Image (cartoon, rainbow, N blue to C red; front, side):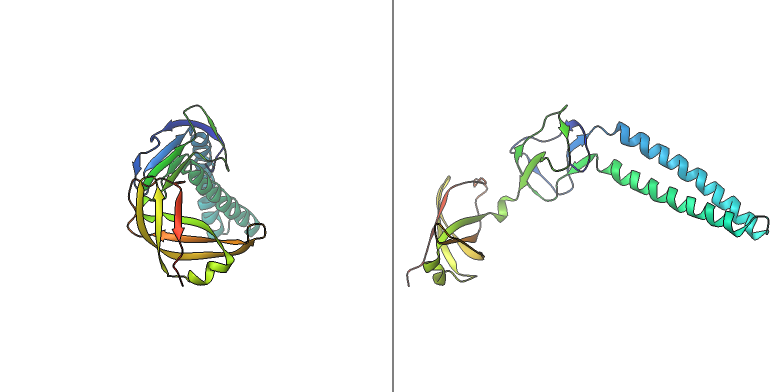
Length: 202
């Protein structure tokens, strides 16, 4: 959430299939709607004052200073109205991608706040295995190397390719984290599934 507000509705549950742009959570927007209405009213008033000042300056019936003040007030009111519309739009949390809801952490009536997760969404077609690999074996796992991966649930053997090797070394285990993108992952694979990465023989 980008706003501090009470949760009005949670439209999905754990395991729900979602599409990019689909509304997942609606926050109570009444306060923000009132703020947007007030900002629009101020903008309309400032707009009218600006056009009036424009006519007066064209007719040389007002000072340049008064016109500049009306122009500045008009610009500030417009910016405030635009901000209020953005805030109001943030009362709806939408899915950033096609995927599956992994964890629903809020219920209607809960207080949402910036920095607190509401739910998680993952893409089952873009799963990867992360494995700590002893430094002495990293030479066998160059980026792009095809490897074999064994998963516990569902019990399966699949193929993958090394995508990334984290540059930081764990000083206790003397390992580096290797990230392997799974090729054609099954939709049954859940985030957190245990797996084994088989390092090719030399």
